[in-house]
Figure 1: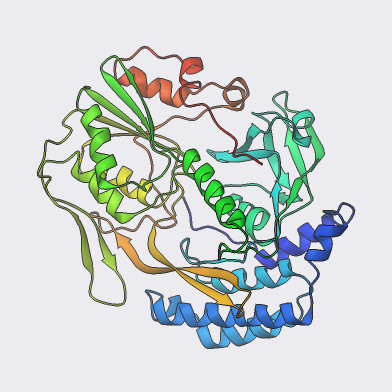
Figure 2 (figure 1 turned 120 degrees about the vertical axis):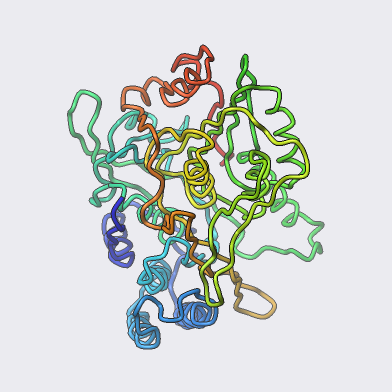
Length: 447
């Protein structure tokens, strides 16, 4: 995949706002979004924090040739023209986007409301499709899984722009409605407007427990819901185990427990589709469980001398069976590293779609404004590039599967999974596309 072409995030936010004037979130939520002088000063401080954090921690001290000081002053002047939180947040995001780095970005403060669009889309090959529609949403009567998404709010949806659209819609500038240009399975284009659902949240939360713990327990419940969404799931079928890996974020004991089950089977199918990555420690532990020798995952190239990222030989029994790895356009970071190690070490086969190409190592640096009442935000900053054993980085290039297997719009519409079905066939397991599509049911997060 070629280097991503970037559309200005500020431009996207401006365009989205212009298209959404006719429908608002309601008077209460609009009032909470009112942009005042104090908000401008806070936004300028966030921009300054972005500048300082990157200058102190970014792995490349040349900033890829950018004049970091001059860029900051340019964007600080631009910030003075902001008229909304969406404007100011997008300016900060654009400032960081100049580095063209998948792991360096702005994590804005939480909004006093949550937005659900009622649908999800995903890039498959070079096209984007509606992948899910939430029951009870406005989208139900207007969109269907398998519809091809040509544009959202007049922005073409491609492999290059999909991540920007997702970032703007969910982080920088949540929208009261979205306008989609759709091509249905019959090849007919149509334009639909889908109303979002908004849920007001508390603007100020009491985390001291003096309210009886109401706010604190709500945060805990929200975290439990999120944990449920990313739990590890697997199915044992004949001589194969199919493991749905939603993220690389596990304790060593959990990794070892899963492989204890896997060792009962001749083939392990690891489904990394949609896996955004996770912790280096988890990546290393998973790798240790399938190799009987030391493996270098990558060299960490940062401000200091390169440091190898090593999975040392395991002290316990490793899984010696056949490995099949599934990836797609949403497989990123640690998931991509693992898939590429499988290829370079000739340990198994990788099947599916071209992966994301979002492979760096980063840390999140949290910040806050205010005294008694805090506004929390942060910055993910890359502290190392990762160079694989073939002397190449996966950033912007991704993993090219050994076998390209893609679902069609019709497959998505019918809930079929030809990718997993093909993997099962290679493992000698009888599993058709319809049954494969039902193995790991999708679950919407409560709203």
